[in-house]
Amino acid sequence: MELIRESVGTHPHYILISQIQQLLSRDWQVVLKHVFREGNVVADYLASLGNSHSVGEHAITAPLPDFESPAAL
Image 1 (cartoon, rainbow, N blue to C red):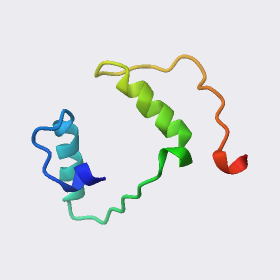
Image 2 (tube, rainbow, N blue to C red; image 1 turned 120 degrees about the horizontal axis):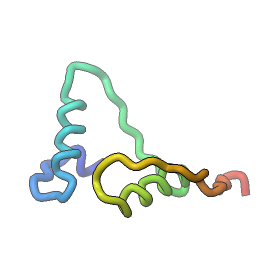
Image 3 (cartoon, helix red, strand yellow; image 1 turned 135 degrees about the vertical axis):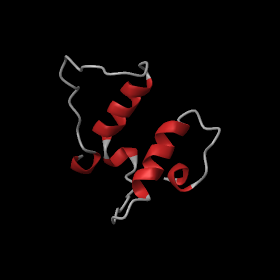
Image 4 (cartoon, helix red, strand yellow; image 1 turned 90 degrees about the vertical axis):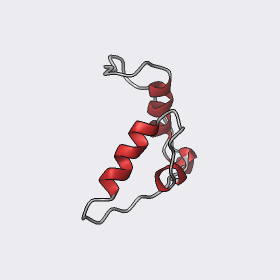
């Protein structure tokens, strides 16, 4: 969230962050909410998976592992 609010000219993901900043600057109302990774294990898994691959399109051809919500424990 801080990266989206700041100037990030030297960040490795500068282009993506600046595109998000451009979308947020349009004439519409947007609400961003931070969710801790413990609260969204599937999104965390997909983000980690994305970080381990090169840039481009990738198909997930196998089912994702079963995730159990920490709140359900």
